[in-house]
Image 1 (cartoon, one colour):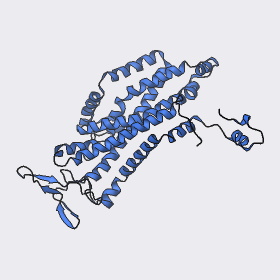
Image 2: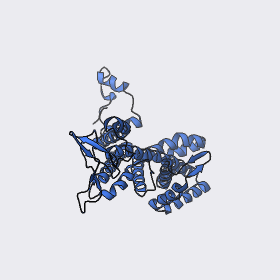
Image 3: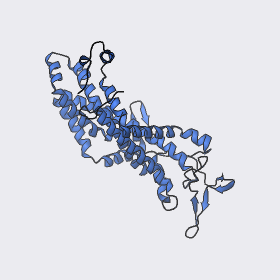
Image 4: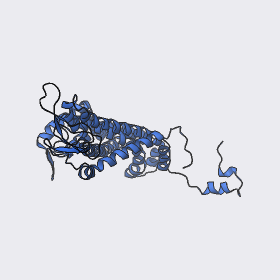
Length: 350
């Protein structure tokens, strides 16, 4: 049986402490739950580590590896253990024709993960590519969630003809297979870019994959939010506010949106993971990130022709995607459980 301040003598010190202790708000309670979830905290640590490593890409390339990962280095050489070796070594397989990139040296000061077929440092390119992959996934998730929240809230709260029109638009987008729609938009827009009023987006801009990925997932987020709004709209506290004559805008701002935001927050890590996979797929098909920029998807494409000679070129960025997406999914599960009011986990003292 739990003990409250009323069960204790008035002169008991714990009674005074319990009376003075303020009640924790819902966000503080959610953070306590999340903080006690070891798997979610470990996943958050992995994500922070990946983000920090990618942000240090420029420092690593310039001051540690002393290389430019965007410039071909076919005839270059490097020194390892006092021995100077070419970056592209003569092939020793088959007829001995062609060249094979140097393999991993496991030395952070140069070609830690080896070189690609252009003699570029794979480790440095992975850090630069991860920065673009995380940027595209994060910004496109933000665009998707903002648009989906606006559409879902307006459709669910307003109802009538507005709900019918917005729902049919979502149905049209929903009818297309997600990757087919993304590939179609990429092929059309990357060839010539597009203009939005005074804003002009060129064919090689990172804003193209950001815009495309942010649009194609809107129906998958807007529909659950619309359903949540419809449920809240028929709840007792909203009906009571309507009966008291509270303005609709105030009900929307004070009662609907705060309750919807928990669902939106749960979507954040999930959408970032999905967007990262979509960006990698588009970049692998050469219709995502364009040269000279790089992403984990473009590096996998660079390494597909070397799977038998230097598999690390394709496997390293693939492993980075797996680790990042897995961490995002585990964190997403933790966030969902922390924001779920029906969660059975007990919260101890902070």
